[in-house]
Amino acid sequence: MNNPIMPASGTFGSGQEYSEFIDLNRLGAIVTKGVSINPWEGNPSPRIMETSSGMINAIGLQNPGVDIFIKRDIPFLKKFETRIIVNVCGNSVSDYIKVVERLSEQAVDMLEINISCPNVEHGGIAFGQEPKMVEHITKEVKKTTHLPISMKLTPNVTDITEIAKAAEYGGADALSLINTITGMRIDIKKKTFSVANKTGGLSGAAIKPIALRMVYQVCKAVHIPVIGMGGVTTTEDALEFIMAGATGIAVGTANFRNPYVMLEIIDGLQKYMEENNIEDLQEIRGIVD
Ligand SMILES: Cc1cc2nc3c(=O)[nH]c(=O)nc-3n(C[C@H](O)[C@H](O)[C@H](O)COP(=O)(O)O)c2cc1C
Image 1 (cartoon, protein in one colour):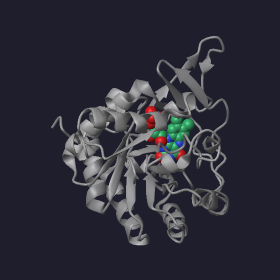
Image 2 (cartoon, protein in one colour; image 1 turned 90 degrees about the horizontal axis):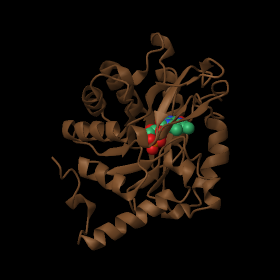
Image 3 (tube, rainbow, N blue to C red; image 1 turned 135 degrees about the vertical axis):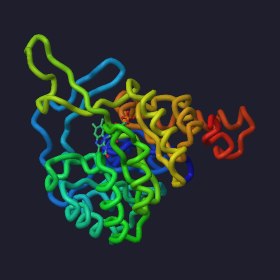
């Protein structure tokens, strides 16, 4: 990658709409929205609600399925110099495997495996909430593909380092964290939930201190690179994640307010490095130890 900045999955499509505003070649990578084996309709509306310094979403991983994704999005993504990371979702191990098989035949640089999805064969608990399941699914995906894989961890667990270690043990090449934190809002006028799904995933600036703490803990617990995310909105935020130990930085909710934000952060990091005589971000990575 030319730089560590990339969009967080689900906040950028495959970049088509943003390409009208920014030069996608400047991004370190493009991370796509989650792709499943069959089309997913997503949850009923309303699916998004603002919160103090953030938002709750319950989109439900709506996507057209891997066949349409390969036909529609891969040719678009291949037009750019930037790396292609495809986010994968599923409701069973075999669903994940089928998507991974299909994508492994494509010109993709890495797969990001979203294990926040409910495991329908095991009572709906998210794959990413049980260390044994995380190790299992990581091993199965790793067996299926020659591509590097990053396991995308959910923060909705008691000890994220146990989950991170299970993914590393299973053979993950990298870890991406954090996904959204389960939250809720109530519409007091309508006296009902603000999103139809009742609960949703909290993201944006509100979650940054939690994300930073988890990225720091995970970076200390494993030996593989971490893509840190959760509320990154400014160059200073990105620097905090790097100093906590992150190798890559993903920007999600901030893109909705400012489509130029990732380019501003890339320029900001460059300026910071020049002003502080830093040649390689490695010099400050994990510096807080
Ligand atoms: C609208 C929306 C859709 C998302 N879709 C996905 C997805 O498809 N796959 C995934 O792994 N994460 C998804 N996420 C989680 C983000 O990639 C990211 O982990 C989270 O939002 C924290 O980063 P942020 O605070 O910068 O948004 C989504 C987040 C939002 C807000």
